Length: 222
Image (tube, rainbow, N blue to C red):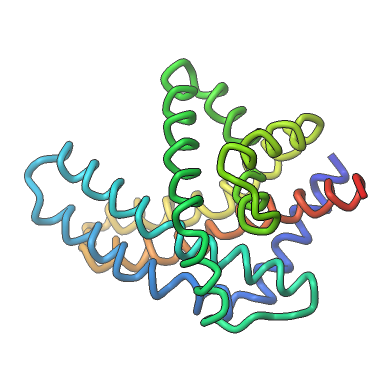
């Protein structure tokens, strides 16, 4: 518990200290994506069509900014501090393997969540390092999945606990604000759009935490 608490605190400190460059990396992708979601939610009459449309678009864009984010985090830890353009270059370079990874992981999570919620969360924790192995160790998607599965064997409960804490920090405030606006009759597509942007930025803390645990595991194994 002490180790997990320390890793969560370190992750939040890193996120807050590097909020500006992190935002500059993800917002160019997140803003148009969430605007598309908001407009689709207003003008679409078919919820199923909206779900698949938003899912496909999100999965196409995600590897680009996630690859860039991983490159940035790694560069800060190594003391290089890549520029935003260099980070995007990494995202473009690893778009294909990261896209394949996101598809495989999404299917695995859907399968786990279909059984019950906990198996899905367990799978998510065991595969939490796969993107880092893919981008930083230049491993193939399937090798990355295997490496993550082995590396998280003794860290799964810490990952789940830390992830749950950060999930509450990121999701609960925006959920409360959105419901408050709903209660006072201020539901509007603009409010939903702004809150979705804030939530998307805050969710980066989960990636930061996963990377922090990844670094601790690899330091111990060296």
